[in-house]
Length: 132
Image (cartoon, rainbow, N blue to C red; front, side, top):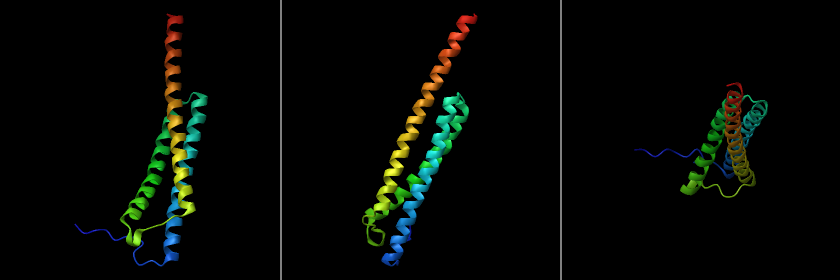
């Protein structure tokens, strides 16, 4: 099996810097888009629109996974070393912080959805008892 060539092979340091910064921005933008969907999900939860919230969370998960895959690809390249060695970039560190923070927000929103679904069920059960 032939090893895949690194996109950074043969790049000058300036080109590598631009490449890493571009990947960092991909992570930040993907995470930011995921955050928007998580925020919309929370708004839907507040309105009792739980199916809509679930759909927004599904999109948030998809975008967050894409951003996470970019991060993983870059870290694995750095570990391999050679032309793929990144070194330290403040923007890449910020991208990783953003990714992690938004993952926590998505997880909290998922928890809120579970709580809302539980309350909805409890309320429906209570209404059934009152009417029954």
